Length: 541
Image 1: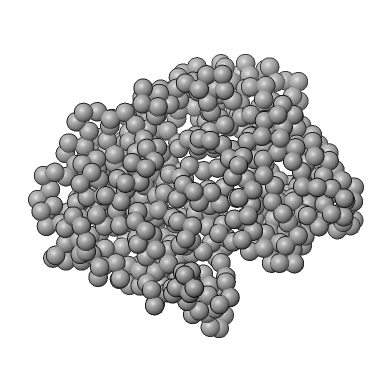
Image 2: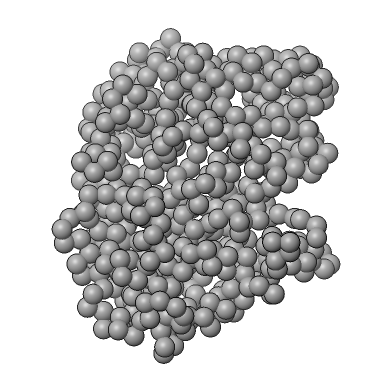
């Protein structure tokens, strides 16, 4: 059977990686469902979940890739309804209207029984959890979620990430299998190996070698007429995050967006790395690339369509993107080979551009309107099991997938649909996972670009250099959130603006001291204190 894969998953997901810190109180979750009058009707093991049919109303984000299907009558949810005796009535919301309609429901509108994949920010989880609109799930998870509980035992960071400072858990998360590094890498670096061979050069292993390669590509100009672009991407952030490990910053990954990592001199302390000498050295390096026109001069404004057109026309000597063969075909994509972490001028060589396995804390949130929270937790918990992951991402054996020579694969009517129907369209008629991660996503059951051979080989090359620890995003108390929403946002905005100006040369790096002084005058110490408190809770102190 011919193997096809859909457009890479992480290009299509609008979810934001949220995580929550530990520090449980003694009475955490004490009212989370032990007195649920319906709990006695719930089977703790096996199927169905309930003997008598249970109707639930779910508010759900419906990604664009699911635009033409109706979750109220589709194979995956019909099959799961028959398994569980739980009938979910889906209120499907388009991404464009998601925030508005979710806020209306929470602001006094009609509450659903649960929010599903609805991109609830951690500030809302805390606010409405403390108002008793969202139920604390601690006890319910202990009693009715053995699969999630097992994952939390195996990886304690999951429980830390979904536990708020008040000790309560208000949601069940979306997870990526920890060893599925290729998906956690998202976009990754590539170089045109055909051009390397023409230049008589090897795949770059240092920042100096990468610079020399880009410079040689510019001089070679294999496309001609100056059209060749030594490095191109969809945004400068991808390049910055890749190079961070070459300069010793962002050493706990990108999930905490406040330019916070761990102090290399004292791992009990956080560090604001955007004022360090290492960060300045990185900006100097990237500025050099930009100033010599080795970076696409339109990288701060390029549209996706233009980037894809450039790549399809073979204009790029290097890029940070998804699987080239899957996206651009063998003729263009087959020219590329992957790059791991580059060794920087001071010997740093770590690959830090990796997402946390906790993709989104708010996969499922149960409201106080729910008639049977225990059954709802069991309904969700199935998707943390191997069988549940197989159901959500592969569907039903004999209907959507089959096992051939020990390998599970989609059936031919999905892989090679008739007429003008694409693989994605055929898949969306039966399954709903395109554009979303539900439960736990596993490499065995994921047929996206990140599990294509070229991407898996890239991940294998990167794995030895992957950062030892990747933080999930911390969560904060109400008072801490106030600091971050004021001074924290001001600092983040100013830091990003100056970062881009330093790279383009609109601001000279000789003004660095003034930049640092400005940040230090923006309630900087209070912001760092907030992150330190969150980190202390995460460490269990």
